[in-house]
Image (cartoon, rainbow, N blue to C red; front, side, top):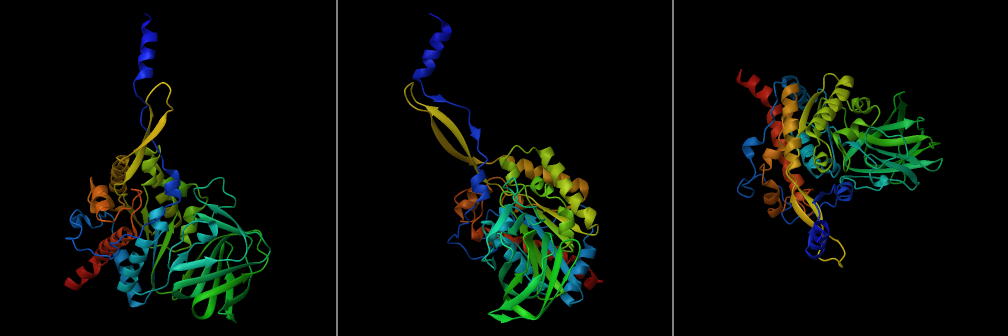
Length: 433
């Protein structure tokens, strides 16, 4: 009997399993559904979450000097200047549940300057933070960072909307009142024809620059306004900065579902765009999505270094802080064929995404070598085994990748504790002396 023929016959009568294949779970990461868990109250009571590492809830400066940063934060609190933080990330930042807590804690400890940047996510058909709205009755052509090819030029926010008609209006509302708006755009300078609020005209002044900024100052503070523009068919809008004051602390959140370090590196002039926000501190929270693709440890170090260098080339006095990703799950698939006549069936299995720790370790090593501050979210969340503990506690959602609202709020609060502790170091030292 032919041995190869016998082997083939044998393989047709026993279950056949193909090699497991990693899924990138792209749809889940690009269109997340953030769950509201029962444990939605924020608490840093260690007895509720004993798996968390509160001793690791600190910022490792890696030799960097944050004394000047602490002085600027104190000056903002006295009302002497503006302290600007730019928080860059993926879906964890786009949803802004953690960013909202971080923003509230920082501005309460200092002085509230305003909401900061708001981005037309909803106009681009993606999820938008809950504390503001940007709407329009005009149809738009929209671009999202991770959906290529881009249908418009790409602003530094990762979202671009271009009006389809000659006239265009934006309805803006925010939980934080504002009296000053800076509109960030690409292309022809938009002309503001009217600003109204609750149907009444609002006096304003408008001033544009040559590098894609239009500043609109209102005669009073508002929580909602409509801006009507003139002929703007060749203008792409990326977002607006809304402030109530030019002193105090402001936190700008720029997040895009599915984003990686390399995603932001693909935006032409990204560093120049971030410069418009006059950052004193840039926080970069990425690495989860790299753990679902083919990115190697060397790749993430290269891309992270490039991104920091790009921003620093435009804003040389800016300080940086890297936030590592936390442990999460992934799905693996295998195809099963039970008999010769049966069809192959795909079977899913949920396992811990062990690549996350490789991304985390690479970022820690890079930050230490380059003297960049780092917040090790991986350790704070409990390190290896954290995913199971977070899920049981209602902090990690059913998809195993995104936190619940409770989780984002809790970790936003913990990050605020770490930042406020670090930014008060210089002041405590001066008090002792």
